[in-house]
Image (cartoon, rainbow, N blue to C red; front, side, top):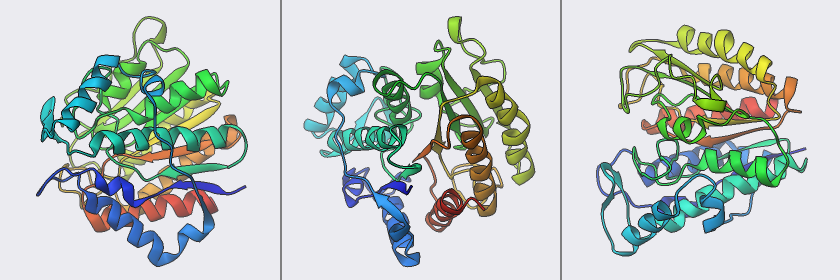
Amino acid sequence: MALGLVLDPVFEEHDTGPGHPECAARLTAIRERLAQIGIEQRLEKIDLESADDALLHLAHDPDHVSRVEQACARGEPLIDSMDTAIGPHSSRVARLAAGSLVALCRRVARGELSGGFAATRPPGHHAERDLAMGFCLFNNVTIAAHSLREKEGISRVLIVDWDVHHGNGTQHILEEEPDLFYFSVHQSPLYPGTGARDERGRAAGEGTTLNCPLPPGTGDVGFLGALREELAPAAERFRPEFVLVSAGFDAHRADPLAALQVSTEAYAEATRIVRGIADRTAGGRLVSVLEGGYDLPALADSVVAHLETMIDGD
């Protein structure tokens, strides 16, 4: 079976204004790099779908969804925080990002595709149930996880977040869910200031959150060690039926927004590790979605390394 790909110029219509790091050029760089090497011919393009209110409400309060809609319609430049820029098309594009990831996951869950990657924006993992923050409007990966469980009969979902920033929104939305496991490897101290080791989930979800904070300057050994030595055994115990990756590429040594020293090649190895987990317990069902990554050449190269490893496995 083919791997699926969500990739479309519409995601460049989310306008964050001049000088913003989470800009349309990120997607342009990825599209141009994939076209240059011809990798799109080895993947199946997924038709875009817009998330309706019912889908967004799986992870967000209705008032939050309405506020995002209204702020974009009024032409406001920011929502909820000084770093979360919006434009008139942002709500529409964010709905397409969430809905298209769900569509990709649906096809993988039903055995129509072996896995896939969603190159979308705005990113999602900082968005809380009732708050936009950290460049994020809707929490795409938690919407997809809930949809898999409620619509596709997938009981246990593992979310692996290797963005350099901790996915506070993902953790908080899922922290009381015993069947949705959240793992994060990230730099600490760094925005947003969450993701300590003692944050392990709450109530029925205690033990299904695992944070691996890394100090500034950590390179491939520490980054990959967290995946091999902490994620892999935890996943073996959890036995996920589907694996989602919040694939930020801003731990790269070239990235301007953080201070980890991860190489492009390490993202290929990280992909091998999570693919191995998916192969062992989830029938190979692995879907990743773009989060951060702000040095354009490093972002494009890392996405290529990630996709080539998903396709070839080596």
